[in-house]
Amino acid sequence: MEEIDETSKAYYNNLTENQKQNDNKMFLSMDLNGDGSVSISEYVEKLGKMGFKSCNNPKFFMELDRNGDGNLDFEEFLSLYYLIKSDGLMKKMEEASAAFEMGFSIAETIVKISNNGCSIM
Image (tube, rainbow, N blue to C red; front, side, top):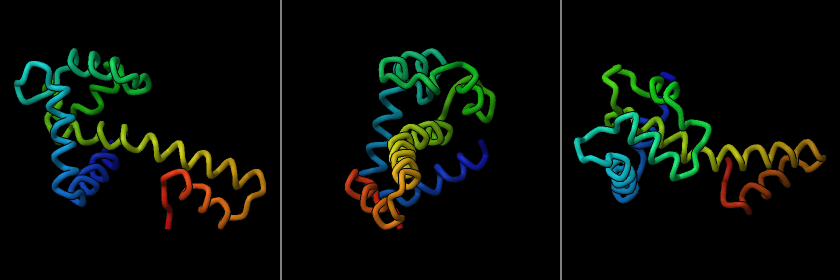
């Protein structure tokens, strides 16, 4: 999880101010009671409504809660949000991998990814 934490921080630090504001809005939307952190009940409720099943469980929450206080602060939330946002990228990579295995060249695979809204290079 430490690698994900570091990657999510680097990702966030390279966002535009507008993108950072959007990330903050997402955090605030999960903080249902407005106390500045996301509790496990808020986490489960919000992710359930959003349809994220793979990370919507208490065990995953505890992995994200690095300081063990029972809540996610903004930095801990960034790891979750990075994983959620990366889900689309992972699906594109899986599609590209399947295309490559089906005999498409690397160039054709890169074009396929690019045409689907993801660019690699």
